Length: 149
Image 1 (tube, rainbow, N blue to C red):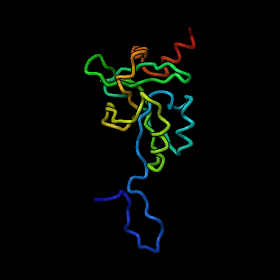
Image 2: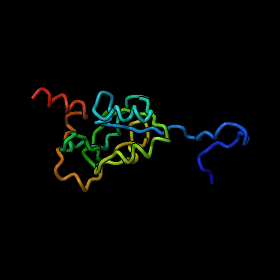
Image 3: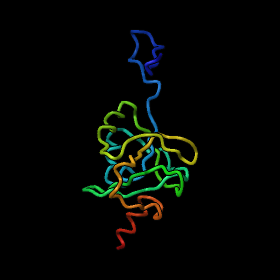
Image 4: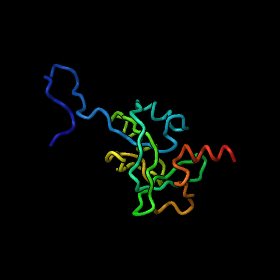
């Protein structure tokens, strides 16, 4: 069993480096570029890798609260592909990200249109007061319609 560190250097050499220095995290709302929680990703040393799109098996709900956030939910039917971003997060910062995520959100596996990726997902059981915003085409598009109303 491995602990995830490359220990091929000798004992007198530099500290062992993680075999996986970063982990890709897909974000779909408040952590997107230009959104309120994006600075927290940057402070953790994350770097934006690319835009992404979920597989067409998700819906997005708007959570109420002091900081509006979206909830990405996988569904068995009626899903669509939703836009987001993939960020490379240093694995050393993963715990700090995890403890900053308020329920009903969490991290799990998100099916992107080009394969699986770790990312923000929501627990269905806590979404009774959320508004389905899937038809707007993603978090940024929904926020834009709110500015115009």
